[in-house]
Length: 178
Ligand SMILES: CC(C)(COP(=O)(O)OP(=O)(O)OC[C@H]1O[C@@H](n2cnc3c(N)ncnc32)[C@H](O)[C@@H]1OP(=O)(O)O)[C@@H](O)C(=O)NCCC(=O)NCCS
Image (cartoon, rainbow, N blue to C red):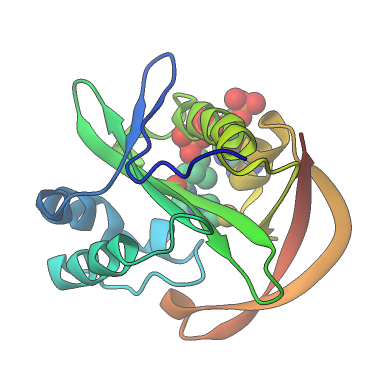
């Protein structure tokens, strides 16, 4: 059985995925305070202030490392450019979620982070199975998940988005197998 790493670091070709720090709050809040980021997630509010980032980082620090993991996506030049996490859902299944700040879209960072994180989840947790979902009006995220090796299950769930005022939004479910 693998020992659980308390502060795992994932190194990819251009990025480091590391444990969040309180000092990340201001930069993450700057990127997260963007409706086109927040509306594609279930949990991010909009507007998104430093207090929201601090609350998120506080909660992340309390996560059970055997079940959940939150990483800041760190770029050597730009610093914290986004977040990627694995969250335990009801029933124990884990799902991957992520976002990247708008100035850094389209450079393959989400795909690179997701690929590295999935390898880590497989090695650290022995995960052979991971779920993810994207809102049906977010084809860019679907493309990221496809490039990371996810396949569509055909299930469409209704999930609410805080930034969209809690509106139930069709969510295309996907699965990754190691
Ligand atoms: C979705 C998101 C994570 C993508 O990050 P990124 O670093 O730009 O992603 P990548 O560069 O790795 O890949 C993006 C892919 O989407 C494609 N894409 C972008 N806009 C698209 C669109 N409107 N329709 C279809 N594909 C699109 C890009 O062409 C690219 O694919 P390619 O490399 O095959 O050309 C980023 O836009 C984001 O954070 N959005 C807001 C939050 C979010 O959506 N989080 C995911 C929730 S499920």
